[in-house]
Image (cartoon, rainbow, N blue to C red; front, side, top):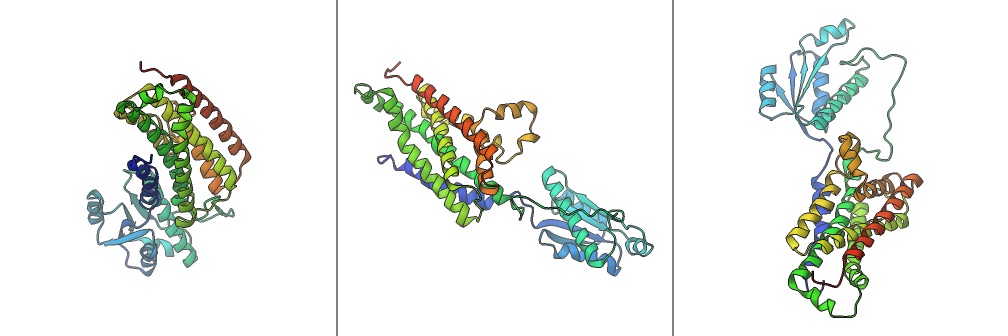
Length: 356
């Protein structure tokens, strides 16, 4: 590692770059949505509804004088939604009826469309509360009052959900990707042949290759932890010692994946492709880091049961946002321990002091 500065750059600089790029650039929150408002009723009541959208921090409002104009904006992707206040809004309101407000949302991105729709309903509900009138989009409320509360992420910020998941990517990158590459590079350079003529045993070779990257991985974990706590202000509600212990277990799993790959292939290109396909891409796509596993097809849900990143994502997010939940901590610890034992054992079995 000392003779290869690129390894230190990848192991230290790349995690910091991933944290900054994903932490600030990747967000599932929907803000400043371009929205067109068509007000066909010049009454003060309709103006109050339009003002609610204009004052909302979630929308960037453009006024349209007719519905065809707003529709053209949506087709051109200049706006993602249209709010239409019809010309009979005030009349129906004064008659004691429930005046309708039409909400048209671009459904290309289903999750974004649902979020925009929910924000629009919230704006209308706030307008109703200020005016003391019935909701413009729903029948009069009955005796039941709904009061919602969000657990574990009260501000409902996606950053609090995403930043702990980034720790998984950093640990996977350092543990599996770098380990597979460095050993494959030694095969290509022929430096492993020098080790074969020494009395060192295969297990000692594996320990010598894994120990520096274990230290490098824990350094990356420390940087992620500090950034999550002090840069992105993600609360840590669980025990720091339990979180560190679980992270060590997952790092051993990632190192085991890298060592198994390095024992099977002796080309950096092939090793990098295998490491990306086996470890890094599943950690991004199938671990629950970005996409809910329950929304995946049943076959993929079954596949995720064999992915260590799935258990570590659940473990890290729970430790940060919910605290020490015994059931999740115990399950994740047991599964990661078994996977680490199997992978490290397989790496030891495949590593032999011979050239063929």
